[in-house]
Amino acid sequence: MEKAIKRVDIMGIGIPAYVLICALVAGVMTMGWMPGGMLGAFAVMMVLGGLFHVIGNNLPFVKTYLGGGAIVCIFASAGLVTAGLIPEAVVANVDGFMNTTGFLNFYIAALITGSILGMNRTLLLRAAVRFLPVALCAMTFAILLVGGAGAVLGYGFSEAVMYVAVPMMGGGMGAGVVPLSGMYAEALGQDSAAIISRMIPASTLGNVTAIVGAGLLAKLGQVKPNLTGNGKLMRKTTEDMKEGKPLPVSVEMMGIGMILSMSFYLLGTVLGRLVPAIHTYAWMIIMVAAAKAAGLVPEKFEQAARQWSSFVMGNWTQALLVGIGISMIDLPAVAAAFSIQYLILVAVVVGGVALGAGVGGRLVGFYPIESSITAGLCTTNMGGTGDIAVLSAANRMELLPFAQISTRICGGLILIVASVLVKVLL
Image 1 (cartoon, helix red, strand yellow):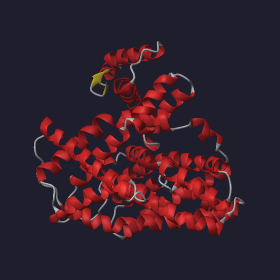
Image 2 (cartoon, rainbow, N blue to C red; image 1 turned 45 degrees about the vertical axis):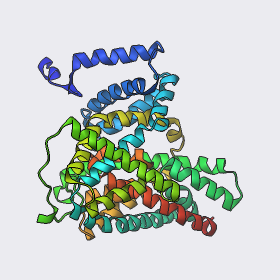
Image 3 (cartoon, rainbow, N blue to C red; image 1 turned 135 degrees about the horizontal axis):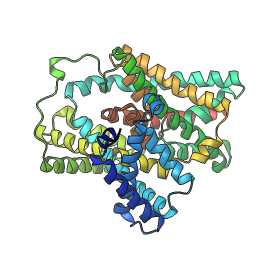
Image 4 (cartoon, helix red, strand yellow; image 1 turned 30 degrees about the horizontal axis):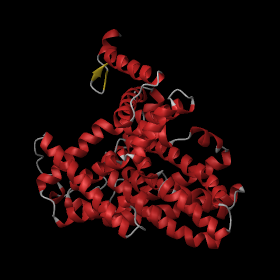
């Protein structure tokens, strides 16, 4: 037994050494001496991330059905905050690092650039033109389904659509729930605070349910291998869709990749300022995809972006998930929203988009599991953080660009649709 324990590493560090590091972080936090800024935030996020990831990947039921380490990173860290075991100053520092400092944007920029530029050009073109219609059809199916369920359960067709489905599909809190509440308040002549309080539980529970659903779909893919591409979206692969020979990994290459990711994010920011109706991430996806499709980026730069993306994903994903749990998951709000009727409606939306996207994806040549996750579940989570949590739970982070299409572009379209429906249904 002792030998088995010694063979387990956490982030490449042996158990005894990692225990000492955890004790150091816990002691510094308890004494209130944790440094502010990036160093303090990273210390907490990376150490807890490594620990919770290993725990989650070794808990029998959790690792098999609930997404393993990813879901434990998020909810264990959120639980520590709720229990008051992480000092408020540390929570505020992590929140600032994630959002104000922009670590979340930095991470997503790296993954989007690397995932798209590292993708085969033919594959990208063939998948992109089919993906958006699948996602939109799946969302329409889920909206009609939850409306019918709301009518049957006595919640109301209109109420279920406008206060459960729409907030879940709006693209997160800042990009979805906040503008939706203002839109509803103006159209209905009500206080936006009262409206947003009705929407937040739907968005939060939808996010949680989507993460759990991703773990279940990943397990289904293991049981039914014919349903999954194990991270590949397109079923049919031809000679012109195969990957080229990779260049050696180097510090210089990763530096080039980092500069490329930041440059594309800046380009997306500029276009987002000029056309604010489209989110920065959406503009970034469009520009990276356009550059890839047009062959504007040299192959060396493409592979550099992929190497940088692999470094970021391999080393910082667990830390990011802990940051999400600490700064963005409100466990009391999630608990307060629990009721059988409400949970059924949320599950109907999440199940509806997953089923619709799986069936639709199969019809257009996608693997059903990958289609259900990206064109389905990622339409019901909380923005970029939700995409990462869902894909991490399914162990399919390479699909982030497609997840972002669901979240950003489909989320923006939902806002437009909601501006019409609020006058018709409410």
